[in-house]
Structures are given as C-alpha cells and as structure tokens.
Amino acid sequence: MLTTLKDPEIDMADVAHLENICSQVRRDIVRMVHAVQSGHPGGSLGCTELFVALYHEVLHHDPKNFTIEGTGQDVFFLSNGHISPVWYSVLARAGYFELSELSTFRKLNTRLQGHPATEEGLPGIRISSGSLGQGLSVANGAALGKKLNKDDNLVYVVTGDGELQEGQVWEAMMFAAAHKIDNLIAIVDYNGRQIDGDCDDVIPHLDLGAKWHAFGWDVIEVDEGNNMQEILNTLKLAKDKTGKGKPVVILLKTEMGHGVDFMMGSHEWHGIPPNDEQLENALTQNEETLGDY
View 1 (cartoon, helix red, strand yellow):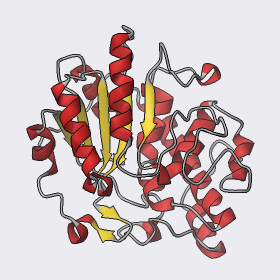
View 2 (tube, rainbow, N blue to C red; view 1 turned 120 degrees about the vertical axis):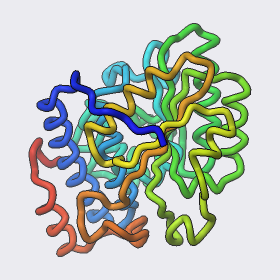
View 3 (tube, rainbow, N blue to C red; view 1 turned 180 degrees about the horizontal axis):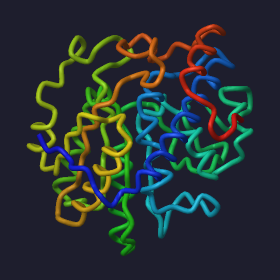
C-alpha cells in the first residue's frame, strides 16, 4: 500500500479553515436533503473533505469565468452524480453561483437537479451524470482533448466504488492506460457501501488496488479519506505523478455519512433524508462557521 507523509509545507491554519468549510458544507447537505425529503446524504457527507480540498485548494479554476470546454483550467467530472448535494454546496461556496440557490435543490424548475444536468446551465456542471459508469469515459475524452490542444491543465473525475461494478468503467480504464492519458486523475470514493448493502455482500472488489495497477494505472491508496491534511498531501502527490506516461488513480477510503454519527457505519443512509429531529441532531454535530444559505 502506498501511503502519504505529512507535508511540512501545509499551513495548519489553512487546514483548519478548510475543515470549517467542511462543517458548513455538511450543514448544507443535511438541510437540502431534509427540505425536500429526497436525496443522497450518505455519500455526500463522506466526500465532503475531498470536494472542499479540490475546489478551495487544489483545482486550477475560475468560478466567475466558467466554460463547458474548460480551456486553460482544470476540469472536474462527477460520475456518481447522486452525491450532488456535496457538489452543489461546494460549488456555491466556491463562488460558482449564489448560495441562496441551494434552497431550490430538487424543486420544480430548479437548476439543482437531483442528479447534475447541463440543460439548466448551472455553472460548474459539464455533463449530466448519475447514470453510473460513464464519468471515466468522459474524463478520458476531455483529457485527450487537452493534450491535442496543448493545454497543460488536468482532468479530475470522482467515481463511486459500487459504480465500479459497471463494465464500462473497466473499458475506460484500459483505454486510458493504452493511450497514456497521463493528465488524468481518477478518485474512487472507496467507502465499501452501495445502495443495496456493503459492496462485499453485493460484488466484492477483492484487491482493488492490484486491479487498477494491472490495468496500467499509477495507484495511490489512502486509508484516511476524511482527514483533510491527508487528502491535501495525497492530491499533491497525485499531481506530481501526472505527465509520466500513466493515468493516476486515488483509492480514497471514506466513511459514508461521516460527520453525522447516526449516519455512519451503514449503507442505509445512501438515499434516505433525515426527519426534523434527525436534522437538528446532525446540525448540532456541525457548527455553523460561515453562514447558512
């Protein structure tokens, strides 16, 4: 297993600030899902540190000048689109659209669909997603396009671990390695759970790292996927590995429902909204630091 080391160049004050954003994002997630009694809180909460690190520290992007093509910027795709609540919250708090728009999540005529969509023109969204298995293929195309256009920026894609049961993902993995798409970083939300139960009880992954390695990828395995400093270290390491002839994948072990104790340790909160009492419980576990929408 490849582990990361603590990077002395990381400012702990910056880490604390990012962790404060995470607390606020978690408040956004549970409030959005509760308001319409619909959505997917578990995976969203588990990926909060990752999304905050990407959009507030790592990505080279310009929220005020968003384009579908992403020329001259890093490009991000979310393949497991059901975790849209965390993405919408982070996009809003990074400046892509007004924070108040979070209150329209999953409502009629909203731009914040349950699964991200492009028809409504929401800044930050480049593909419709949530039909699982497709994101890595799209990311391959975007990364090849950047190479053809001599654009040195990177392409990132997040997938779920249950999603890897889709055959298209493995075709895309082979394609990326065969074409040496080395400006691509894939991140697997490796929480071990999916809608029907634990992945091991549905279709076990067995040695997932060995599989990606056998398919020609540079593999980074991380046990602390909800530790902000570890995520920052890992993303830096992944960037350092790009441009060397292989695509890069991070197997990020997260905890579904992280940050809300009664949602952790089970697949049951994959797609269940909290009731009023559960919402208040979740909010008390995540202090308001930046202002609710």
